[in-house]
Length: 118
Image (cartoon, rainbow, N blue to C red; front, side, top):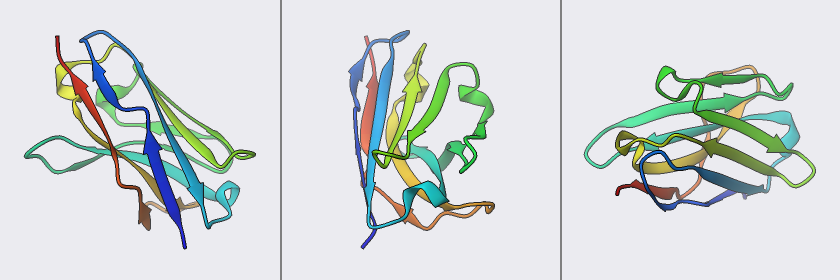
């Protein structure tokens, strides 16, 4: 059974930073791309970033320059460093399994909530 468990969310002031983490199990982590999505209250899911097997990275425009996705294959861990947070970044962030070389997503974590408020 594939499991993805996010952590690291919380309350942060505008301009602050957070590092989200995701631990995976039940899958050969190193052979998959991994992604982060987010969903703000009352809004749809938004793709945020992907990191491939070869550590190639992709970001949506609204986080480019403020976010860094990374992975530690030895620990089956995925990370998302978010800097210069804005109120519009408030959302539940999801860790998602992405088959390598493809742009669809197969397994989702439960999410970790990020609140940006002064």
